[in-house]
Length: 281
Image (cartoon, rainbow, N blue to C red; front, side, top):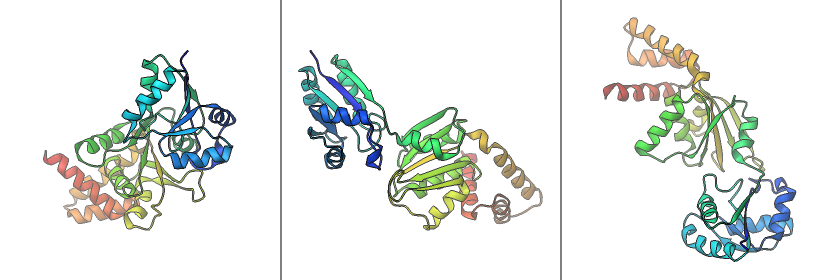
């Protein structure tokens, strides 16, 4: 008889968010496959569980999966956990799940905390439907295409970002989506230094661009759908047309738009440069 693979959601910060069912499973399994064994060991100690820990991360998942699948086929009960939240979403856990299914092993989800749904629930942004894109590409055509899709989508978009790239990403989103598009940036959710910033992309991006925002920890960003910013974008176009009709200089138009929209001049300048490059093609 084959064993069973449990896909166990774990806390994204506050250890008390672990569910009673997850606690029972983690105490009962033969081993836990974890992205970061040191981090998972803290949770296991918190709930009084002592299964064997196996490293299963991006760098070794292909090799580690062979031993885990063999153990499952032999009847072992194994829990798959990520660093935080629900496994197999934007992490290498999906490969182990696929391999287990292919081997005829039962795969059982143990639902619980998800950074995506946690932030969506408190973002204050309409999300009858939404897109989750994980981490954006760091650079190049792929990144540009991903941001373009976010700008054109009428659904809310949820993405993760690192402290090293959050300022650049917010600036790129403001340039592509328009400074008036709604956004929520959540930092260190459920942790001691939890912080929420809600508003327009122009307003929210500005302190990150100036270096006055806190950029430590993990970020989840929710961008409103395109329809929410359509009226503001139309207003920006009208303002640009009016400035051109008066033979105003580029600087005059940028200054006027920044004042009209109530955003930093650098945001409007970034949008103008992006439009210039697009029209030049």
